[in-house]
Length: 231
Image 1: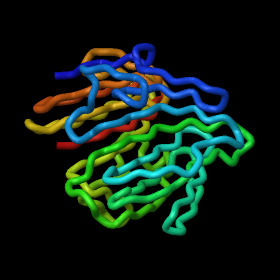
Image 2 (image 1 turned 90 degrees about the horizontal axis):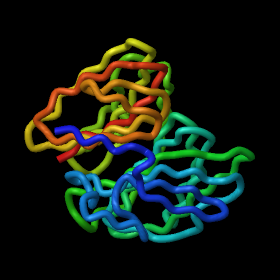
Image 3 (image 1 turned 90 degrees about the vertical axis):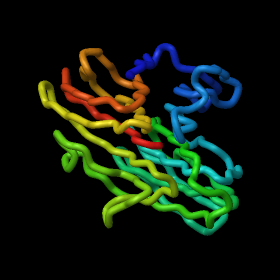
């Protein structure tokens, strides 16, 4: 089953520095039909103004994956980690037993990103953070694993049976994917437009997929895709 989630139907939050759109219930946005999808709990689409961001705050027992769409985000946490993640690249924070962190747009331009939260396989694990580069040219026309519970040497690790993929397509390029029975997929278009099993998705639209399901994706324009496969 595929449930299309148009960008215009997402939950919203606005203030002077943040423009946020919520694929699932989050903060003051509550939709009882969008409380999560399998172990995927949060998918936020954030636009952060220059020299602003999230002041130090705490998390625990959550795998937090940040995919930067444009600009860059600077991370700093209570474990002494600090790093800058640029457009197209990914950072993962395993909050585990507890961590304080800030996420700041230290750039002179607006930063846009997806922040994805997945519940971990177990509570109270040691917290960690990491970032990695994923050149868009390397995922042209095919899936590249960005983060996973079973990572390769080039993939960031998360503590759950889940996989986060990225891909870029040109017009008429085709991609396929099989969602197994009992698993859940969630796809969001970072840019461009595609046809997913006959339905058109435009930039920042989402699609919730419940397996078993065969996905056939065709590029309508140059497109950038982020996709989660989880239990």
